[in-house]
Structure formats: structure tokens, C-alpha cells
Length: 386
Image (tube, rainbow, N blue to C red):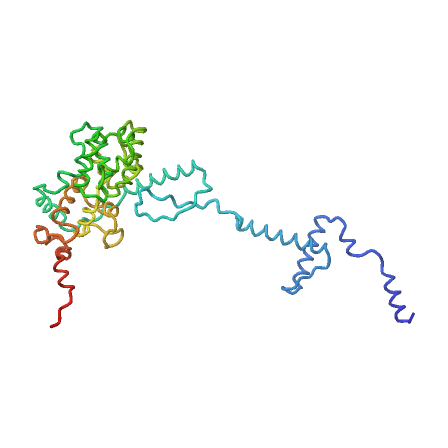
């Protein structure tokens, strides 16, 4: 063997069998583990940020434990776990009933217990009642009293369909309990239907003895639909009639619900109907009954606006809320038949008769929609060339 190689072999064989790896494998105390962690930090700080350098398994174990400790320390500072939802996060609430044009943020309730959802729904109703009762009063429109008095004078003849065939006229000769149910059914049928058509349907139901909850429950849906035809959506309303009659029979002994919220919970009953039934059936005025006529006329007169704007209201419910902010409460009940009849005879949906209207000087919309279809056709037709 050559001499240089022999010297290298002697030097290598003289190294002791014990090694640092064997020493690190010994049980470590708290102080030794702290020193190891500090040494590992110093060693890792000297390395390049992008390189991976582990001398042996023990050093890898120490490095892993330090990273876990850092994660725990970050969680402790922030006070929350990144994999869990914040327990203090609150739901914005549940949607309101009967499509009231509310646009709240919808939150999932799949993980919320049923009793908590019920409590949330009840609290939401209470909040709406508080908001309605605490609605700030706004300044009334100019000359509204003069305009209202002028409409009253034009309505003295009471020759509008609502005066004799309105849904509140149903069951006028019946006892109070039976009359309340008749008004409820008549109101249900009146949606998207003229008063004359609704009146005819109520008369046919009366002839068959079907203005009674028990009788409606025992009658098949097809027979009811044929009797109320041609009211709008007559098949759907026949289904609603049977459901409403079943609820009234089981929960109220054939009478109708005594509160606004309970009426609104009935199938097919919206705000307009519920307020009308409360006024006529229970003599309880909780709000204005606003239908398409009241909605249209109030906007034409400039009496109502969308919240925080000077823009016209878009729905009857928006009109009701806006109107109630300034109209005295003693006008809430009579304004519906007053404006409905005015809308049926003078301030009609198409081509209102502004020329015979005694308040046209007080109306900002006067003569702006009163063009006849013939005059519009003449203006739109191209001129003939000779």
C-alpha cells in the first residue's frame, strides 16, 4: 500500500465510534431542548431562505417542533382559529313575509337549531313593529287637504263600482262572524280582478252556500274554481280558498284571524287584503289599505316618495309606508274607498279625465297622461307624401 493512502487509513481508523448523533439521541431535559431550539434557529437563519438543509433526523424533529410552536403562538395572538367561524358573527335576519320589497342579506340557517330560528323570526317581527311605530313623521305635501276635499266632492255621487260591489260589501247582511269570513274570501278573490267580477263570484258562492269555512273544506277544488271563474288566477285562488278555510276552521272555529300578522300568514293574503279585513272585519285600523288605484293616484299627486329620495314609489307597499308617515290616522280607513272610486271614474289608469277633474290645478301630473289613443296614433303616424 502506498504511503499517503496508509496515512489516511490510520487517521480514519483512529476516530472514536461515538458520534454526535448518538449523543443527541439521549433523553433531553427542558434546558437542553431550549438550547437545541435556539441552536436550530441560529443554524436555520444562516441558511439560504429557499434551501432545505437537514443534517439528520433529530435536527428535523427539532425544526418541526419549533414551527408548530410558532403556529400556536400566532393563534394565541389573534385569539381565533383560522379553521373555525367567528362565534360572535351575527346573522342579518330572515326575510320578511309576503315579498314586502325588503332586500336583506340572506344567511344560511342549516346549522342553526330550530328553536333559535323561531326566536330569530319572532324578534324580527318585533323589530318590524318597532320600526313601523317609530317611523319619523315627515312634512305633508303642500295643498294635500285641498286636493283631498276636492276628491270628496267629486265622489259625492258614489257611482263607482267600489261603492256597490267592492269586496268589503260581501256578506253585509250576515252576522259578524260570517261576514268577517265573507270579507276575507272576497278580498282574496279581488286581487288582479275588477270589482264587478269579484262581486259576481261572491254572489255565486253565496248561492251555493260556500261562504262558510266548513262548506268550502267539504267542496272539491274544481267545483270552487268553476264558481269563481273568471276572477284572475281562479285556479290558484280556489286552492288558496280551501287552505284558508281549513286553517280558519281548525285554529279559529270558522272565524278569521284577529291580528294582522296572523292574516298575513294565510295563503294568498297580502298587505292590502290584510289591512282591509282588519278595518272591515275587526274595526281595527293598523294601516292604510293600498291597492293599484291608491298607489297610482298618490304618485300622480306627488304625495309619496321612495325612502330618502324624491322618486316615485314602485310598489303599493312602498306607497303605504310613505303615506303613513304624514297622513293623519283618522284618514287611513276612508282614503281607500275614496281614492279607489276616484280612480275608477276620473283618475283612470289610462287616459285620465283631467279635463273634468276639479283638482287639476293642484295635480303636478295633470294633462301629462290624458292624451287619447286616437291622438297618439295621429302623432305617431308618418305624413303621407303627395
